[in-house]
Image 1 (cartoon, rainbow, N blue to C red):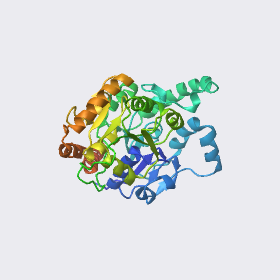
Image 2 (image 1 turned 30 degrees about the horizontal axis):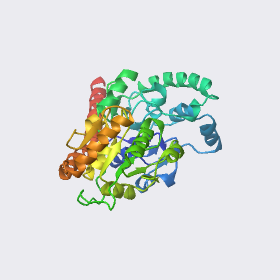
Image 3 (image 1 turned 90 degrees about the vertical axis):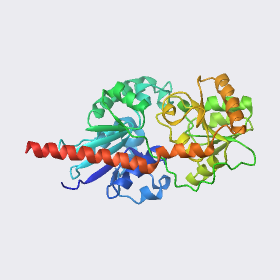
Image 4 (image 1 turned 45 degrees about the horizontal axis):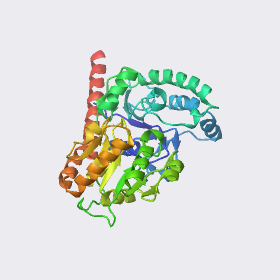
Length: 378
């Protein structure tokens, strides 16, 4: 059986987050594979990704179209990539690159992090397009792209996703089955013992400061409770959140991976206010430091957090609900009700090595099935 030639496709290489860490892990499985993408900013990428062959559109026309007609240009960009010389194409993303074009004799496997929120409205994410001036045009455009998105989701031969929550969304919106392989969490940081006490105990929250991440709820709650809070991340809501935050809340903005892990290491615990989280890598990263997590009882949190063992849940998206659980969470931490060693041990089930093994086995299995089918037909 011949060794397949593999290409990777990732939507945008413009920020380094959970999706890019997943791409890195896939690339480590297939180290000779080039990475196709619509946009690439080397300054925002890891050294590992920058060391790979990156194939992306260049030129003034592309730059203008991507700014002026972003939503219109994306389907065309991904459909224009030429994958004819590859046996296997592995795409990962949310919206665009599952729509790449491959031949019947090629294997296309797509790791879909979630169907796009802006198309299916299962949680709210604010965009500049929803301002009154753009809204009529935007509504028409979304209907058009929703049709394209459904068609694009039929193109992969197989779909992998990050959680049972996302698997259900994929089945609902696309009518497709998906294999769940939880995304990789890197434990290569220099963790201490998970028990280090900060000079001033604080809680931490990490994420993009956008509407659907519920950071406004978090800030309002900590404004009332006045526990120290450190927020890592940037986004459209940053200015507003800083305006309403009181002095017990510190905004760190964009930080390095090393600094993020140090802040997690020194914290009392993580607060993750997101509802219907796709998977949630940050809670697992916190648990890898032995830190308990307080999160909303929904989505991927239900697959990563064991109540009263690795964290707690709050039930309603209200200041009262979060405040009540936050006080209980703080008391449990001070009373040493969480076993930091067991939390760290539990987090290991989401390791990068586990992901790579599961992912490689799935790809190999589907490739071998395809080869046997072709042999039987010939």
